[in-house]
Image (cartoon, rainbow, N blue to C red; front, side):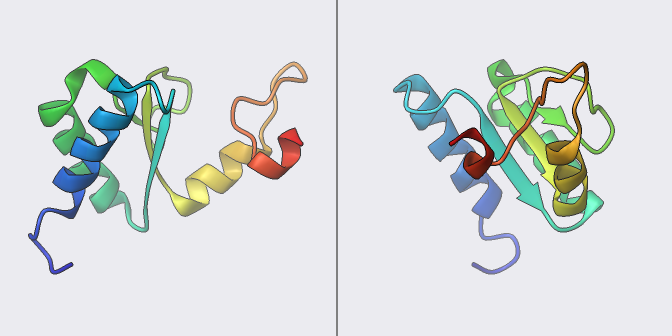
Length: 95
């Protein structure tokens, strides 16, 4: 989709539907630049504030239902463990 066509807004509406139907517990929204993460956080807070969107680039320990991050930040968090517990893990590591 072209710039300004509403990609983020479409994803927010889909996330809202999936969470209301209890099909997902948490959502991970990945962007390739910090500026796009900031834009997405602002959009989620505006359109879906009850989901408690978390910017993982700046708030690595915050809790919420929607997590927004860059690819490199998320890769670092997947490998991170505290007290033997992993907050985020790849689907393959849970099998």
